[in-house]
Amino acid sequence: MTFVDENADKLGDLINFSKHRLVYKIIMDALHFQGDNYNLVVQEDIKNFVDALPSNSEQELYATSLKLEPRDAGRGDIR
Image 1: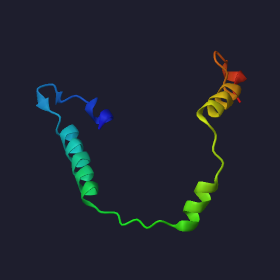
Image 2: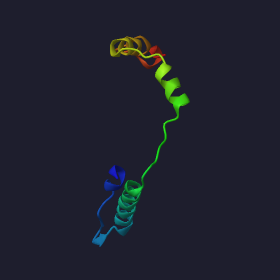
Image 3: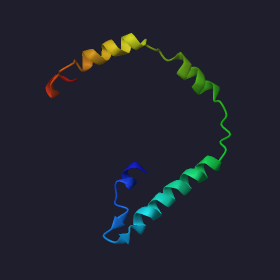
């Protein structure tokens, strides 16, 4: 929707119907998907796998980020 809105509403003195048709389609698609119910079932084996993955604290993640992409690094310095 963001990029569609960048198009002009009018082309000269004419209404840009292509833009308005596209906006309508995006809105209708969103309404369609909001109406669907998803009956998701928990897959225990996948849940257990994800729960067992190692996790890092926010400080550890930030330190790793700075190590891989230091502040004021040039393009060649980034791993």
